[in-house]
Amino acid sequence: MKDYYGESFSYIHLKFGDIHKQYWFTNEFREKHPNFCKEYELYWNGDEKCRFKTPLQIAQYVDMFNIPVEFYYNFTDTPSKGIEDVYAYFLREYGGINHEYDGKMRENYGFGLDGEKAQVKNYKVVKGK
Image (cartoon, rainbow, N blue to C red; front, side, top):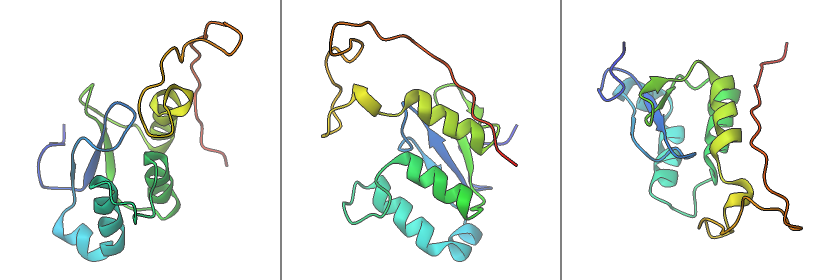
């Protein structure tokens, strides 16, 4: 298996619905994608001037512009199977109604406005033709 903690290729770690655990960009990658690296590092550092406001935006950018970076699930120590896998991960894990606007966890997010109990659902993301 590839070393997703090493320095031989470019990768971004995913953990807890975010994209802030660890990353590495090779010198060749930085030379070819300097503006992506700059924006990602602004995101990493929480800079409000960053064009990326969510980890899903970063994944979409990587997908749309064929940025050759790999994603890795830090919590399970497994590489992603592709961008569809990354999208599905964010659908399952990222924010949504369980977070307040300031990013803090919302209390009682597992209950609806009228006392309904949330139902866990799994979705599969597939790439269209």
